[in-house]
Image (cartoon, rainbow, N blue to C red; front, top):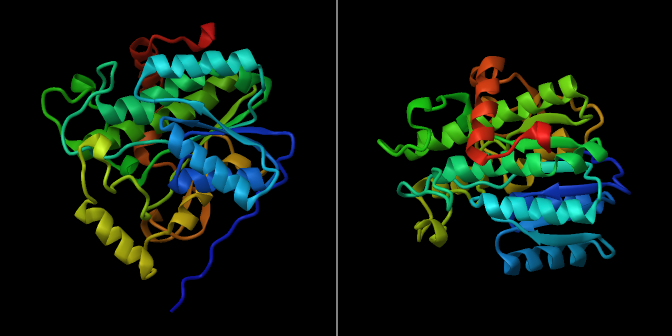
Length: 314
């Protein structure tokens, strides 16, 4: 049986500036292309300039006249995050949409960022936390919607407060879950603090379900020279339309969360099929791991200390 095409409507975004991390390929590139097609000017912060150039060329080839450009960003380096913040603040353009999409998953061994943080926690979460802080004046000026991409992995696990960098006993999957739980708690706390301090920003969450993205594919830079057995199974099930999503459907929850006029602040958007693994995007109940405002406030405070940033000083 052929798979039913899943689609959404993205409103006219003419005059808006959108920033999408992790958009040099795959799902993020698909998001960036949709935003550009809807009229937004799209900025792609990328770690690999060559991949970024190819992404820009693809978008312009498919959408002549699209306004799209790259800037340098390595989320595993807080200095790189600060440099991008400086660059964009100097340019002075209000940001209307920020989709925090970039991430890494389950490196084959314990690895750290240049700043000494466990790689998944530092890249998936802490780098984005610092980025939002560095861009806060521009986000406020654009009354931005900030959408942070979490994962089905956030539905279980916890923050390993006694060993947040997993130095004593590393578990790649639990460390990945921790990074996404922290990210989700942050996204919800950002919305609460924006309301409390009058920042004018709205913040919500999305997750793509399970689809054959590049997260578990060969990543030599992470020490993974070939695809994992898990990604091979995901590709097979996705191709047969069994439970899981596709690269095309996986980008839709974040696009809905970031652009739909009816999308709610402080809400989670994900596939609506069995186990939230695939299917059309819609608002879903928050995972229990994300419902504690006290835990979110603790994550926020610790993150400001670790990243050496302060939102009230931004």
